Length: 125
Ligand SMILES: [Zn+2]
Image (cartoon, rainbow, N blue to C red; front, side):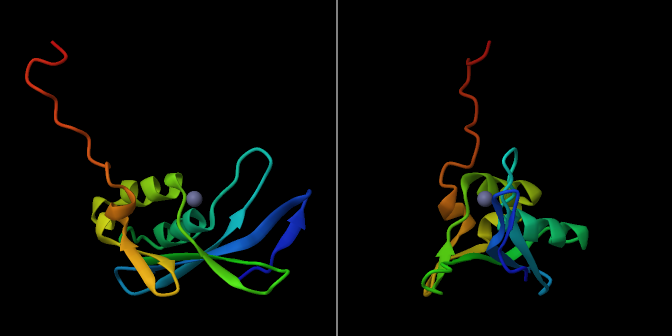
């Protein structure tokens, strides 16, 4: 995986992500932080998975390395990445998201109100 580099005063690759697809393949990606539009490491890894024709996630993790201490920190996915994972395949709501050294939760737990409510009878008429 890319070591963090500074490009135009922005950091590329300081966060890395790995996605284990339901088919058992691992895809990796890095964060690309630009002034106009950034890409999270998770979506970068998911783009690699989609490029390989796969859409279902078994597990996903993102880590950031503190260059000062050398420690790795597990990062939970941002809201855009959570919704992106759900959007590429609804079955991904059951995917495990690693949120710490010994912790993981399902994507549905990170998107507790992901379902659109059914319209009440009489509404919108
Ligand atoms: Zn994100």
